[in-house]
Image (tube, rainbow, N blue to C red; front, side):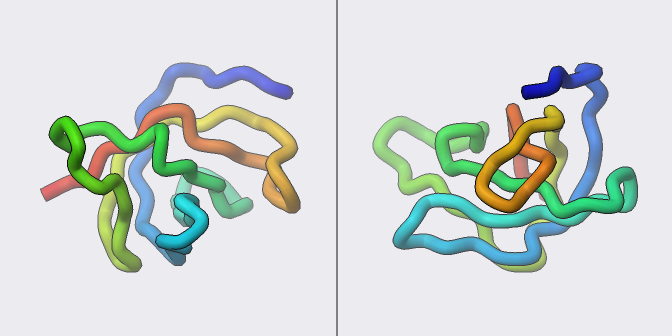
Length: 81
């Protein structure tokens, strides 16, 4: 498992599996897609369902990690807008 450099990157949601609670974000800063889990989503109120929609623009921090077939994993994600 790698570590994050703490930089905030921007990306776009490519897919989101509502029933499984995770999805994929693409960012011009990385060649590989970024795996995102709903628990890392910020900006939702208590009891509010946490999810992203395809096309959402987000800010996120990323670490190098092996997560299923992904080599990058989000540590923190916030939608823009």
